Structure formats: structure tokens, C-alpha cells
Amino acid sequence: MSADRMPRRGRAGALPAGAVLLPRIAGGALGWRRQLAGFTVALVCGPLLTWLLLTLRRPESITAEVLSYQLLVVIVALIGGLYPAVFAAVLSGITLDFLFVAPQFTITVEHPLHLVALLLYVVIAVLVSLIVDQAARRARAANRAAEDAELLAAVAGSVLRGENAAQALVSRTREAFGLAGVRLLAADGEVLARDGEPLADGRMTTVPVGAPVDGSARAVLELHGHPLDAPSRRLLDAIVAQLSAAIEHTDLRATAKEAEALAETDQVRSALLSALSHDLRRPLAAAVAAIGGLRGAHDLSAADREELLATADESLSTLTTLVTDLLDVSRVQAGVLAVSAVPIDAAGIILAAIDELGLGPADVELRLDAFLPPLLADPVLLQRVIVNVLANAHRFSPAQTRVVITTARSGPMAEIRVIDRGEGVPAERRDEIFQPFQRLGDTDNATGLGLGLALSRGFAEGMGGTLTPEDTRGGGLTMVIAMPLAADDRKDTE
Image (cartoon, rainbow, N blue to C red; front, side, top):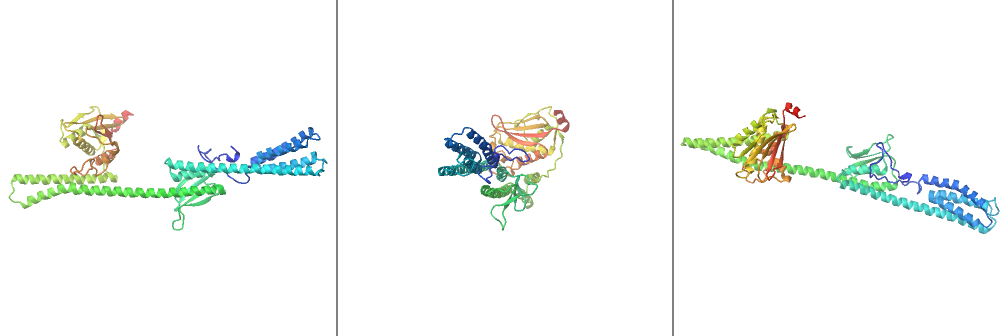
């Protein structure tokens, strides 16, 4: 690798693997080191060749002497390009005229043909130098085109691999042009992407990015380092165009996310209104009808009156539960859930939940760890979690099939597993069952607002635990309630 192609090192050392550093085209086609090498060869090998030719000189050897100097000029041209070759041609021409062409030791030429030969020699030497120099220029231009293509391919690859488009473009720009730092600033001064650091002397070039908005560019690209040459500026224009497209894409993606969030909010609002219209209307209507019957009828029997009172009580209790669930889910979503965590016995909470649901040995099979240490949880919230999960499992279990509840210790946590043999839930839809106002597979709106599992996960996480679904071996769904052990018992596991 030539010196003008060596990667530039920054404060962090060498450039990252795969970095593309563009060659800078300035001055002659060949670098100054090669030109210096060409002059050195001309100055060192010229006198040595003269000494050798004078030692072996014969009267008829002028042709060999001219060709020898011609070979020296070609070698110098291949090494250093145009200027060293012209210097070698002129120097060797004077040497030939002074030492080898009669009259010797003068710069005059006795025979006209010798003068023509000398002039042709110098012209040929210059032409060979020009050809070598032009070939070097073309090779350098081809190399620059290849580097440009490699840079654009690297930038495109970074974006296609999912990297941040603006950051990838800024990083590649700094690496390619050998800059100390590059920053992409929004119109309000916010740093959108950066790579490297500014120079202490403040040398910087700014380039507007994006279509003007209200008379100013959408962003500004700051290039900290040496000024770019014309070929680099043309490539920079292409990078700036891609940066503009990346900024527009980012804006569109942000707009799409906002629209998605609004659509999700509308969906939740619609689900809430739908649930309220069905789930609240029925108990409210039943309570109103029962109370109206009690007030309007004076000849009711004691049994009828008791039945109307029971209906009103049941309906108002259902309304209380629904409103409580709505308030609870709002507190969970707002992050203001009140938790009073104390050491409790898991078995006692599980039995209380079974009693609340009115289930018996024919419905639930218990496999509890008798040596499970106390849990650290809120008794009321944990019972609500188990009631909701157990009711859901019992509802979806096949007839004559019992729900299994197990407890076990897992490191600093205790796991309560509620296992059913129902149809289960596909893995891609498991997050949906924890969304508020969702009833997976329900269409009758007769089973509440669809808040049970949403509240259960919120309660569990509020107590420092988790609620996660798993596949049941052989078919079905297992809900795993993980709760931390009390502090003393956690120490025993560490």
C-alpha cells in the first residue's frame, strides 16, 4: 500500500475493520515520495551509468550509449513519473553531448545527425514520461472510483443490516474522508448523529442537508478536518442525499408510530365502550328493574320480594366488581398501585382463592410443596391474581378434567403454576391475553370486561413478581406466577 493510501489513525487507533479510506487526489498523479525516489534514481544511477559507459567506451558504441541512457529515463519515469523523467532526460542528453558526441567536452555537436539523434532522444524520453504519468493518473482515477463504489456499498450495507441509517452514514463519512469528526445537527441544534471529535483549531466545513424548510435546511452536516477536494465533494453530495432521505424516513417512521399509538388508543377506547355497553348495561338494567318492581308493586309475596332483593343485590355486586376492576386497571397503568407486601403462606392464599370460586376436589388438583418458605406479597392482590388465573383455567378446561395447581421453589423466587388441559394459546397471541378489554375467543361479552389477566399481570409485577404463560406438556396452557421469597429465605438461597 502506498503512503498516500495508508489509513489515518485517530485517537482510538486504527480505523475499524472494513473502513474505506478514499485516496486524496492532489498535485501530480504520483505521490511526492515516488517523485523523490525518481529524482534520487536519476541522480545516483546517472553518474554510475556514465562511469560504466566511459569505462567500456569504443568508437562505434554511441548507439549502445544512447540506448543505455534511454533505458535509465524509462526506469526513472516508471518510478517517479513526469518531472523526474524529464530531469533525467535533460541531464542524460547533456551528458551524451558533453562526453560521448564529438567534439567532446563541449556542448556543441559536430555532425547534424548527432544533433537530431539527441533531440529525438529527449523527445522520446518526454513522451515515455507522459505516457507513464497518464497511466498513473488513470490508475488513480480507477482506484478512486472503486473506493467510491466500496464506500457507497458499505453505507448501503449498514442500512440494510438494520443499523441506524444517519449514524451509519456519519461514521462512514468520517472514516472515508479521514476526518477528525463528523456531526449531523438538526435545525434546532439537536445532535442527530456524531462520530469522532472536533479539531482544537476549529477547522470545519458545513454542508446543508435536506430540502429547505422555512428558508433553512432541515439539518447541517459538520465536517471537522481538512477541506475536501473536488472528487470528494462529488461523493459527499451523494452521501448528503442519502442523509436527507434517512432523515425523511426517520420522520415518516415517527409519524407512523404516532399514528399507530393513536390507532391503538382508539382501539382500546372502542373496546372499552363496547364492553361497557354490554357488561354494565345488563346488571344495571336488572338492578333498576328489581328496584322498580319493589317500589311499584304492593301485593308482592315475601318470596317474590326476597327474589327481587337478591337480584338487585347480585346486580349491584356485579357493578361494584366491574367498577373496581376498571379503577384497578387504571391504577396499574398509571403506576400508582398500592402494595402492602408481607410474608404469607402460599397454600393459604391458594385455598382462599379456591373457596372464593366455589371449586372443589372435582375441579382442582393440588400439588403443593409443604416446605415452601413464605412469600413476600400483598395477600389481597395475590389472591386476586390466583382467582383470575384459576377462573380462566377452569373455564377453558375440558369437562371432567381438573385444573392442577403446583408450588415450588426456584432460587430466590417461588412459583405457583396453574395448569389446564384446554386448547392453549398460540405463542404469537400470548401477549394479547394480557391486554385490557381483550377476550381471546370470546364473542358473547358475558364474562366481564376482559380485565382479569391484564389486572393479574399488573398486580404480580406491582408486587415484584411475574406472570408468564407456558405450554402445558401434552396440550393446554400453564400460567406461572413467580413471587419473591421473604428476605430471610432469600438469603438461604444465596
